[in-house]
Image 1 (tube, rainbow, N blue to C red):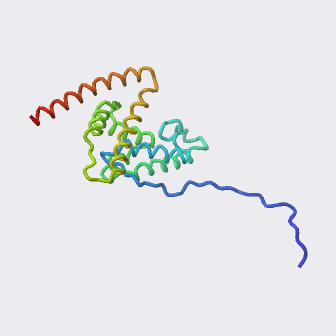
Image 2 (cartoon, rainbow, N blue to C red):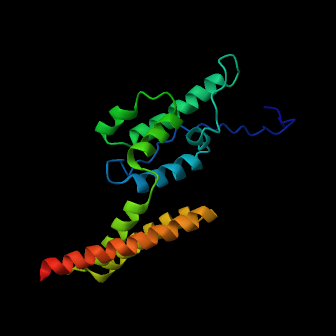
Image 3 (cartoon, rainbow, N blue to C red):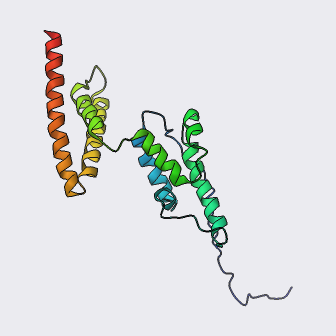
Length: 190
């Protein structure tokens, strides 16, 4: 056997396919849109496909060489969204043509664009949550979760000056609503 020395080193070839399983530990139902949407944005963004939700990754014309790739990627993102829903919700959104249409339809279904009601409910929940014999760490974690959600909703609105003004008016209304709710509870206990 002769001495064989390679004349050149083999070059590395990296093939990137995103056929990995998509974690769906949180399944969208009527109660968890806020958490689900944040997780989906993170997971889809981590796979460099967020443009399919925002519309930045627009559908090319059928004669464009990237058309087939766009169809494949759009279907992949659609499947991630649909697979992370409860079965009865899947039926509502599965026939929509693009991931963006699904994303927007879900948002319209579960979020009205106003955080007033949710902020009121979160504030009320923060005042009424009790330890009730649970470990202190469980009670504390529940309160932290409530306050983080309140902060998230308020900060999201404060990104613009108009948002700040809107937030202050929301908080004023919440104070009035909490006062009325508290007075109503006190009157009922008399």
